[in-house]
Length: 283
Image (cartoon, rainbow, N blue to C red):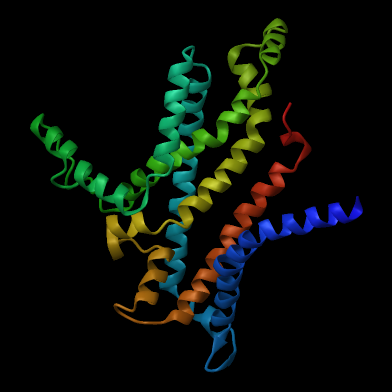
């Protein structure tokens, strides 16, 4: 019996071997290479690359990325929660399933295709721009899709459906009995949400905000395709340093990437901490 268990365990490890090899090749080794390159300068270990990573231009790129990520994450949390609540409370099962499927699809629509879609739609000669101009509403030059405001709209496009997918399970966890009990005790609808529902949903909302923040902070293709170098973001700076169109400096790019990795790691760690708290457990 014991020998059979050992054989089953060995077989299980053999089945998992490709997964571990994949993780080693595409996750662990690249991170180790990134750390080694960022701490290497002039043939030896040095912090010089990190000193160059905090010049005014690079600091501005981090500031812009943090502001863009925070604003789009906040918009995604607010808008996504409202839409998710409408989906959860919809009477038609078909409507609920259809909207959930739509959110699933749009959450994965990003990168260059999304940027081109917004250029075709809200560009200077886009479909919506020309339609509005025909009825007397001129978007340009007060609004430009190739700016931070346009980039914010593009980011919210994939942030909002992702928030819907993240918060729907938490909204489904709100029991009807809690609302009935609050109503029986004389609580209004606003008091129920302020004192019962929102405190219960708060950890899920905060955790979702962190995931949306990390999602926006690491985005590159949409920003580069839509605005190019006009908007100074850290991902754009890293790509420019790696491609070498102006200046080839992989070591500096690795240092910027390692700092960005630290920001992403803090977001994921914060989400995991929130997910393991007792008050985040399912009711």
